[in-house]
Length: 340
Image (cartoon, rainbow, N blue to C red; front, side, top):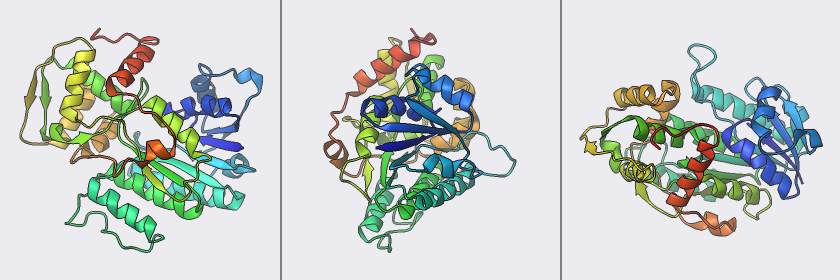
């Protein structure tokens, strides 16, 4: 099977490519800079062995897509644009929409059999509504995003839902996996949490600390993505998550325990996302353009709508502690964890 991995220089893409090769796929990787792809993939495979074809392209500009998709059976779409915009006044949601439309059109032209997309979990009401849309062939039967009866998704999550709709609408046998926090040494949401625990002697947590999610091990995400290439699940959206339901406050406490540090916590009764997001970005050394949209998504529970994914994709889930310990070990191969 010929597979294309977009975003091959990113966290998930660079881990997915070698696993697809191990599974017997012929792999092509697409990225904006060949040098970045090589740097990201080199620790995981021998690029001089000729196992993988690197294609330079840009979904936002529509460059290189026809070449990249030629003869492809399955295309993985792992492109997200939450870094600072390259042009003033162009929000990440608009860039995501344009890139998805360009890619979807090119995939349809090329006759790709399936697109596999990794998006984000939606608030419970909207996730159920989206499932109803799919059940009705996209013909409604769902509460609109932002309906007063439901929970309004953040800009970040609404953008990912729009990308999902565009991709699944272009290639009917496509599959979308929706995850919350992925636990891995290069996962920026996970790194943000770790940096906060490392650098805050007292964890001052807004009201979102009570909201729950199901963080998932990067190994389980990659295994599910590999399985999604050929599993008989075409046209479906699957919510994926780890085996444990944790509030964000509980996650930070567990991270402190695993880092072997004591971090007293103070709970606040308000959310203050614009202020808290900028403070968190400064503490963690992250770009506020990334952190603010992520923190906007903490306004409610982000839980899978059902338990189908692990069974359908034949993946045994790792525990939260096992996932974190593995991520810490990989982290310390490249840089020290200050708290340790």
